[in-house]
Image: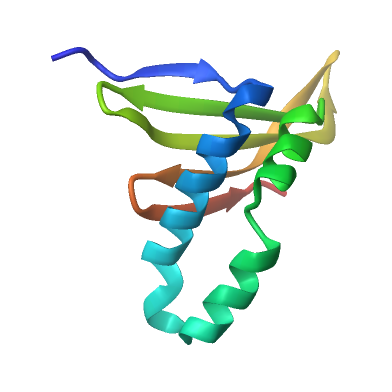
Length: 107
């Protein structure tokens, strides 16, 4: 068994990220919402175009977790405007890992 690997996402990852994020969002929130509300949200959110936009932004760092079966999770880190010394920090992020959606925000 090969251990999972972590890598930085590229533009070509927009489609699999969209698929994973949509599946994960459904698994996490469908029980709290109506099917119509979920359909409406997903018609406008977590699309391939939105992932392309996220991946193109220099303030975002998208990491992928891959295992033998393929994409197993992702994390999005957002560079903040906080600077310590000569470095800005990544303080806000959210993660998708096989059916679970969570976010962390550092303010």
